[in-house]
Length: 591
Picture 1: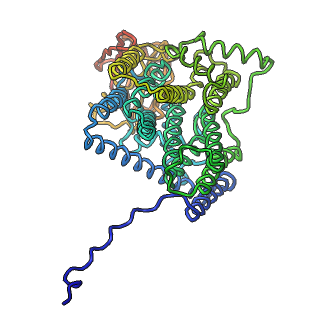
Picture 2: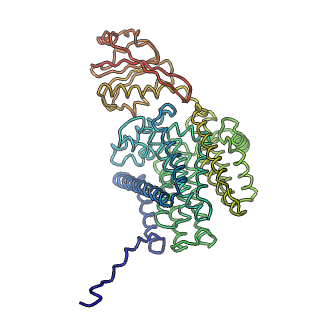
């Protein structure tokens, strides 16, 4: 046996999968974009098999991206531990844990009756062959966003926690993706990674973010998707590979089928994608110095991604968008409306929106429009002005109070935070300045303290929710009673609520998600309802002691005596956010 046989050459290590964008991979990407774009058009235009196929491709692709996000987050954690970046990892983890505390926590957070209808529509979609993929739900908004929000409830059951998690987890994912990619961007530009904590904590200082995060409804979804869009676009500018471009495509397409304000973010994303592609093609990009793919192919891939997203948006018009996207206020002067709207926005005239950041935002926009900053900053500033104007000029579904209409502007917050942050760190780098660690700590503590203050405040935008605070405790009390009596929230039972507050009479809206098979009844008077089917268990709930003194209605009731003799319980809740105590009275009657 010769020497070579005794000492065989070790096999080469397995080559890593080549994800770079070159002539070959570009053809695959363009084919992919073409196929899913055509499938989307067929799903809306023809339906049937095409709608089912598109729905499940979309669903399983989404599951893949969640797994991809979790693996990236996991790798970041492992790398931070290996490199002993415990402070950076610990501080951001603290922020995520802190925000997670509000999910299912009704001492602070709300149960939104609009959200329960949205979640009910999302759960119902799983009974449809195509998940109601091209359909609409609550007030005619695209249904796809509700399918995503309903997944926690589909897996873990209907509860207060899953109702909140459906909207809250997407926000946490968006914030984490933004943080990870801001860190990477800072590192690649030789700037301290820990600076990435500052914009993330800055979100807490915007009162609308904290208020609508605790509302756990579709209004926070545009903010979450905008954060995802920013983070993934940053990733694309640093890693021009197949996964980066596909991730941007998926989020951009999801924007096309979500709550209307995020269409503003979609438009900005398309503009930046195309400008980035042009910059690459003309050789003017300084970000792509270390790219491994082909510049021309990367440019075409960006154009293909933008076209794919645009087709998904156009497809929503085939069956007719129902969110009144093109309906505007009549008999108003455009110039006067714009000037008034901008003045109110920058001065917080109707409600505190910019708050502490008003000065920073105004300065940034003045520098942008005077061309002291980059062209991208000018585009962002003009975009902000356009969003603010259109959010007020569009009619929506009703004549809401201006303080509530401001929630349509929330998409500008993550964009402004990131752009101002990047402008500041670029300035510091140019002049060889740094933010000292004590200053960083002070800023983080200040943002967090401001956030704590904001989380403690009653509703300052859509004040309607201030009048329905008792309803979340009613849901909690009903859940507790069902468990004590061996019932599930999906069982059949009667649910009767007595309240003189007309804003609390919509128990059916809450039951659509929490108690889908319950027979609900709302009464403002003092009569016992004998018309219900009392062969089922019955839960009576009242905001006062009237359950002890109810009189039978004109028809009388065989079960009235049993009702009258049954024990009346009560439970008092402390509403920390509003500084009040709320008591509900209850009777549970077995058949």
